[in-house]
Length: 246
Ligand code: UDP
Image (cartoon, rainbow, N blue to C red; front, side):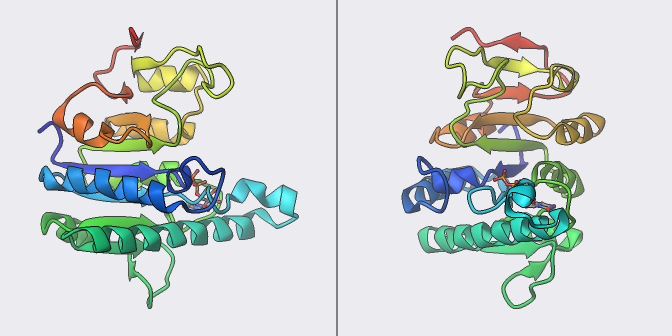
């Protein structure tokens, strides 16, 4: 096994599948199958859940809502997705699942406590992180890297809806855009590639934590990556920037 402990970053879009927004049962079921397959390999799994399928803080101006307030709404959206994911994982599988939230909502989820999260993982529980880091003015990308470092994950699996890795241009705008097979952290930043927030790549670089970016709809991707099969784009301390052949 290439990795013993991973943190999956699930964009909110992974919950809406082909729909533009909201929560699609079939998309969630697909995610559950993939996460279960990974856990059944014996990999310890933590998940940072996004909320963009419901609300993002950057919609603040459109809605005339103050940014910090809009970010609170976005964080609550991640809690909704996290609870859906826990419910779906629990109903489909035998793994214990814990939601840990960065904002206090004691009656629905545990507070995030780093050592307790690590203990859960050691026991084979799946740990779902809700509400990012509980502060406004960031998305869940930076918190995904931060939590991965805190829990000593070996890698981050970044599942993007409909985007099969890091591309030289936005593949939704240019279907012929070239995909990187590997790329260095510095090249992601200097080339202005926006697949995740740049702050997330800089934090990952400074702590030498690898990030695999792949399509959330690619049903076997997580298992393949855990087994060491090249899938999507690899960004890591030993990456060499090069495009995929295919
Ligand atoms: N958010 C925040 N602080 C955090 C994490 C998230 O304020 O630590 C808010 C922010 O407004 C963000 C929203 O929650 O836009 C939903 O998360 P995100 O945009 O990362 O969702 P994704 O794009 O992954 O679906």
